[in-house]
Amino acid sequence: MAITVTITIDDTDEKVLKNDLLDINDWCQSAINGKKNNCWKRMQSEWTTKLMEDESFTDSIPSNKADFVTLVTARDDYKTRTERDAANAAD
Image 1: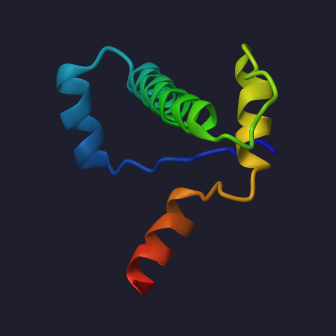
Image 2: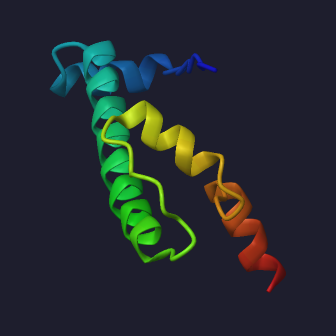
């Protein structure tokens, strides 16, 4: 599954951004790449700890990103941010 994200910037904000940025699209792509990297680091750290502390988990922890994410997101105890927020709101 892949998603395409579209951002609409009105004329005024485009002028404001062009005051500071060489290329708005390049800046947006860099911002997204930075966020993806930070989210990955947090997920990897959080779930490596959880897997290591789970006595019922006896498999090896994948060393590549795709396999790691597949393993984690297939677990019964995995919840997306939306699911975690909904569970917290219900408490």
